[in-house]
Image 1: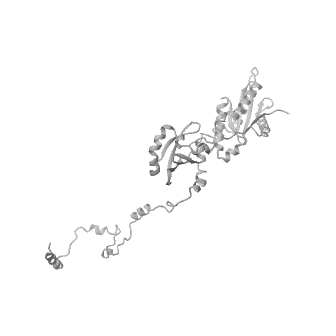
Image 2: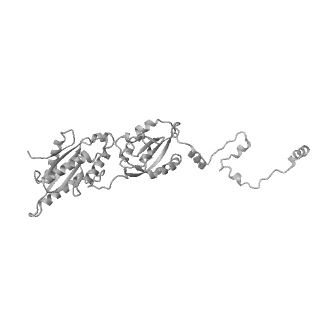
Image 3: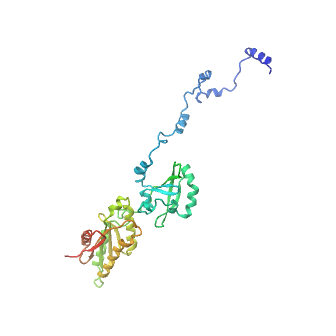
Length: 359
């Protein structure tokens, strides 16, 4: 169209009929779309009114919570949260472990952080899972992926743990935090009101009942049968407070309970005490010489048998024992005399055992 034609078109425009809009449905929807028809006459000041509630909620959802961009001191998080968390936490930098909390130490059966700090994280991972970790760490850090990793304790036991990862911005090193699943519920043994919740051992009330049954068995034996001795020993871990300060009390008690149960004869009863750590019932002992041998074995369990678990810390115990039918004449006396012998043993600063003797 040339200039003259354009001028003729514009000059005759006022004589033409106004344009008609055939489809007016979109005008009805204008309000729902947040469009004010009056504002269309003033395009220099565009604005949107009465945004539908659904769109408003979508905008709010896209907004971050006020705390998401906060920079906080990682040391405060470690000291006030991670140290006491029941979830295992491992901090890794350039593939080396630089921090573990107490829950991790218990899970990996460690007694000193020196056994882990500076070590390769993969040294605590089952070798068959090394590639699994390498191939999935990216997704764990960027997409919040959870990964089950078979961890290897210091005693070569294999235990799976589900981890999540948090990336630590570090310009000089590749650093991140692994946070494990909560372990306290899954690790609790089956128990009822007659068994100790922590160790799964019979509790003291069930122990007393078994002592009485053992005494009754000897008292009511046929007179033609030889009556055997019944011994009771009470064990107290005198330096348990040291393990408590290291947040390793539960770990120490469980390991000692397990060691006692596996080291003693199958017909013996190892029970968890109330005031004292453990109680042991030894029925069917033929002679006092046999009794003395059993007492030596019991003391050696703590002097030598637990050394693999407590390489960096000594376990100091006091043991008191007594024997039925002499000097103890009843189940009640067996328990009472064992406690008296224990109190004498506690006067020694090292592990010791005393057998009750009548004055």
